Image (cartoon, rainbow, N blue to C red):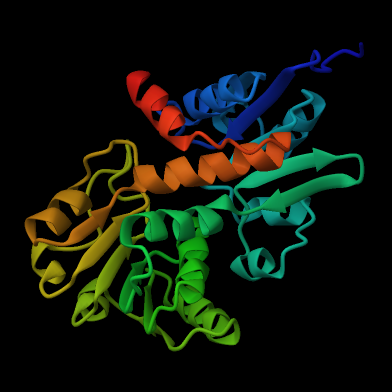
Length: 284
């Protein structure tokens, strides 16, 4: 067996990001492995702590023989130039959060995109998103935006501190078939009269306290989603629930995107999601 090569039945996975020590991904993938008859290791690769650039960390993951690895903030867009992306929808998103090394090169996927569709439908069935205020046009925001197109949103209002970035995303959504996509300069304007609100920013994440919206911004809406899942209780969540909105936790995106990523990495589909959910909660 070559150095770094995994033993039969053992799969080496990992996560690359800057603020990931509280991530639940290692537990999720290990449990997915146990339910699939695989021994899974899942290591954290934090470029600043390793003293490496992101590109050097990417090379380290390949050299370590990982069967696959996730990529999170702030590298989901930066990784695009290091991978081959076959899915045109993911190419339009311009962000990747799952990398599968192959003999032909590293391939990029976006399970935030597929995971949000699964999470929304699990919560709301065939309910349509309506008019949505999407706050944050970065990696996860882009993935959710294109997922909202698939889900049949009537209008997607993109808000980002970088207005040209929001305008570019709105144009890309229109080109991808969105019923209507516009860029808005501020959160209050975007949320006024919307049916749903999405926090696609890091605000609320461990190390990034706060919320992108004010309490009054939630008036008149029916649902909200926060991409943040660590911690589970965020200010954005409390604001939405206090306003009486149906709420989808970022934990649901984490759960469904992780299941999708595990299948990409290992070729194994986890069918018993109820058991996975219960065991993951027991380990929290």
